[in-house]
Amino acid sequence: MVLDVRTKKYLKIFALFAFVLVLTGCANNLDAKGHLLPARAITEATKWTPSAGLFDFILVIPIAKGIILLNNLTGNVLWGVVGMTVLINLIILPIMIKSTVSMQKMQLIQPEMQKIQDRYKGKNDQQSQMRMSAEIQALYKKNNVSMFGGFATFLSLPIMIAMWQSVQRVKILYSAKAFGLSLGVTPMSQITKGLWGYAVIIVIMALTQFAAIEINNFMLKRNPNYKESSQQGSMKMMNYMMVIMIVYFGLVMPTAMSFYWITTNVITVIRTIFIQIKFIENAKEEKEKKDANVIR
Image (cartoon, rainbow, N blue to C red; front, side, top):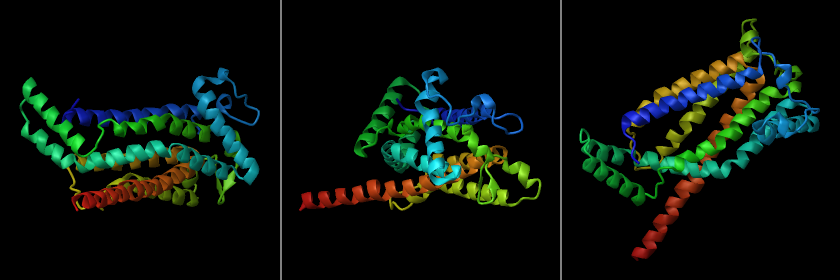
């Protein structure tokens, strides 16, 4: 299956729209003033049973209980949020390794793929489309690329959404403080009162979010064969929109969510650098050495 540029564009817009819907839907944990709804609160006394709902039973409640446990061990719920965020990211690391490697390879062959698509531009007959598909499949095979490899990321989405939900629903979080900031209030409500410490957290969150989005492109440029394609250029605008959206949600949701996003973003940057060096660049060097030995 080969997707044309227009279809890919629509899929990207759909993915962005779906992301907004997910975040908006999760906001139902809070009332109009940003307070946790009593029926959605999770405490030590919350029963961990299937009656809570399959998603809550399998993911949300266990993660929330983990946050509460770490709070009891460290004395601060923020370290519970940070600790569980790190643990969840370690669990999904194998999935992210496969996904990142696949996406890196896919981006590197984009210029060659664009040339193939340009050759068949305007040729909509079945025979031409089949030839184009065959050439693209050959390109994938030559570069050991799986066109479905990038979809591995979607396997980790339920876990990340559950983590995001859990952070919102831990009741003790709303009466806790960290670094002099109340974790249960919204940064917007405090910034309007002139409490600029909350603005600093939002700025840090925005910077780390941008870094988490751009780190993949930055690491790609280390490859001497890298050439930016027109599709990658168009993605920049979507990346900027994503940062703006996250900043908005950070402003209108409890401050704890900003700390969660900062932690996630830092982990994403470290993980991407680690995968790029360990699983892409080192693997490429080893392959080149083996090829050189074979030629000899």
